Length: 163
Image 1 (cartoon, rainbow, N blue to C red):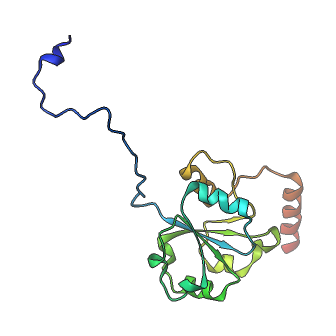
Image 2: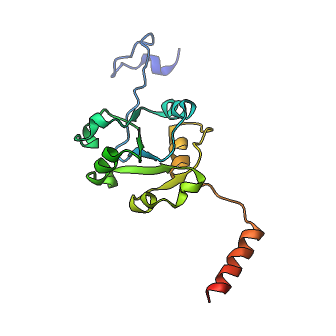
Image 3: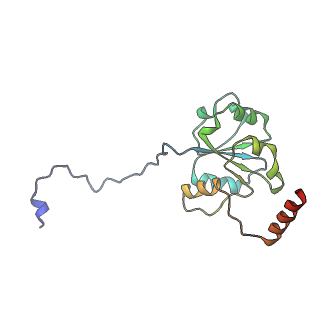
């Protein structure tokens, strides 16, 4: 018997039998992510997004609805070839969202990438993340590349030719 057992209880004890359920709450400063696609996502890639949060795929039925009023999402997947999606993006305050582009290697120079304030341009979806925050971080930050002597040489030659 400890001395604490002899003290009067000020706070009622919680029953140990009651299961505690954690409810995920979106942080106030956590923004949803818009994934602007110029190539199709496979079902496997869609499953990766679904593993880390709620996914909404853009549909033309949302054309006159602000993004803030469509079903809640962590990731909105939108096809940039859809005119209605591009019109909705044009009418939306994009500062309320984190934006990443998912393109093929050849499409990394597309005009929409410069027109829309993208955090990152992806050619592949990250598949190894330990949690949602890590996955979001990998989506929004470009991969670090190793130095290349060949690229450095060509950039040096190109710089000399421009002079």
